[in-house]
Each structure stands twice: as C-alpha cells, then as structure tokens.
Length: 432
Image (cartoon, rainbow, N blue to C red):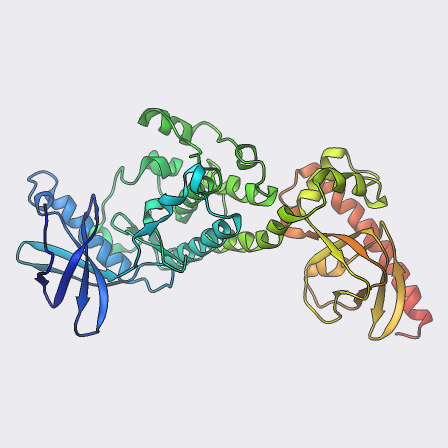
C-alpha cells in the first residue's frame, strides 16, 4: 500500500490520501510556491515494475499529463506538472474538494433534478467540444470521470487513454481495446477508427443513466453488453422514465445512435440543443395536463389537416405559455426564431405604436423570425389573457418526416396569407 502521508514529493507537501484507482493513488498536497492545494496522482509502483505490463502502464500514466496538460477549460481538470522522482511517477493536478463524481447520482434513489442533469450535460458537451477542437478524444467518458465541485460545477477528469490526433503523439498513445465497456461506442468496441462522435455516445450513455437510474446497455456479461451496444436498440429514455420531456429524450436517443453519422456532429451542436431544454423543463410544473393541451389544440384551424399523433408531436415540440393582458410577447427589433400559435385570447400587432391588426384563437404569428431568425418587424401585445404554443424550428426537426411535411405545408400557407393581409393593411395605413 502506497503511503506518502506527511511526506514530501518534490516541492509538494503531501497531506493525505483522497482517492485510489486503477491508474494510481491520489493525494492532497500543498504547493508552497503558489500557496495552493493540489491533487497528486502517484503511479502504483507494483504496476510500474510489472515485467509484462509495466511499460504500457507507464505510457498511459504520462500520456494523461501530456494530453490534459495542453487543455485549459473551466470544465476540465487542469494538469500543472508531471515528474519522475526516485521510484515515483506522479502528475500534479487541480484539486477538486469533496471527491464527488456523477457516479453518486446514477442510482434511482439519488438522481439529480432535471435542471441539474441538463446543466451538467451542457457543460460536459462544451468541454468535449473544446477538447475535440484541440485534437483530443477522451475515450473514457463515464460517471466516475466527471467530477462535481462543492458548487455542483463540472470537471472532466482522467485523460490517461485519450487519443491525440497528432503525428508526433504516436509514441505515447495507447491503442487497441481500451476504455470502460459499458460506456464505449460501437466503433470503439469494434476497434474501428474513432472520431469526436465516440465521446458524444459515451456522454449520451452517462446522461441516460443520470435521467433513469438505469444503464441503456446493461447486461449480465461482457459479451451481452457488447452485443447490446453494437446491435440492439436501447429502450428510449421517455419509456424508461415517463416525466422526461420528449425533447430531452430525443437528444439522448440521438447521442446513442449506432451509426456515428446519425449522432450529433459536434459537442457544440449537442450543447446548443441542450440549451433549448431549459424552457421545456418548465412544462413539468404547469397545471395544464397534456390531455388538456391536446383537447384545446386539436380544434384549432392550424391543425385541421393533422392526424392525432402528429398533433401530439407538435405539442411535444412546443412550449406552453400563458400571458396576462398588456403583456409583450414579441418586441419589434428583437431577434427570435420562435413561431407562435394562438390557443386562446387576443393579441394586437403593432408597428411602432400603430395598431395594425388583431389576432385571435387559431391564428399564428412570428413566421418570418421562424424562417430566417431575423429582427422582428412588429410587436405583439396581448389584449386579453392569452395562451400560446411557442414552436422552435430545431425541435420540429425531430418530429417524424410526415409531421414535418404537414407542419411546413400549413406553415407556408399561413405565411402567404399573412404576407398578403399585412401588405394590404400596411398600404391602407400609409406604410411603403
């Protein structure tokens, strides 16, 4: 057993052991020159001296310092230094108090609130985007390698088997079947060429566990796990946990696609979609039930040509909003890509301070912003209590193809009518 408590290692004063893993023992230490606490990971001496695996182990150990040392991101554990002293190989890293990881929050009885899960996944996706842009693929994203600070911030750790896409890095890399099987992508298991999308698959598996308390590919044996990851579809998130918003379920399910081309292209794309979920999580706390929403919506003119399943798809891709009289839903000049369907009430369209026309139940507004994401050309002010469905383009894209075709057909018809009506009305009001 490695015991360095109350000893010195280089310039560092070791205080106590704070962790132990397959790659070494981690100690809390103090750097007297910078007056800060650090974490020092010390390689296990018996593994270094192993006649068959010692060389590979040493390579993996210092590879972490080489790879992580080049990354400077608030959600990645920073590596400060690495050294060999006497019989000790060690890496000096940022100290994260508390020794907490996401592993504590993947059990059914200790799951985090949905808001926290989305926030953590968002930060991980952004951190992976940064690593990927710096030619680094982590290859071992899993709950135990995602640390939580006392403020519930996120730090991705353990780059010991990371893949560095640089010609001069080949000598220090570890190739072959490496990683944690439960979280490996299909291409990683099959030892096929890897891309950044492999990490996004692993993050998807972690996110699935955080939401459901279950692993999407759990099995009784390694062959069973491998067979599930490479061949069998997982149970969709929304079937495994009923109160997960459909949009979040779609995001996770996309991360877990077998074919890398069907997943998100980048961590930034994944983070962008996760950012949209925040407004949809609020739906969980609304008093209006899904059945009530359906009964209100199915009678609207906009949905005359939709089948019942397609109406549900649009509801699941929308935010349900209620507004008091004299509320401003859209402000002229703002940039917004949302499209609104009036469920109840009346709103007034204003150009400057000039009323243009009134919209009522079943009408729509926000078409041009939805198409182009450009500045709003008019303001929308409520005249009565108003209920709207706020539809985002990025969420409609996740609906079935038939639903998308139906939606865009009705949408374009509505847009043509609106442009014609607006042109006529503006002409009468003296606008050129």
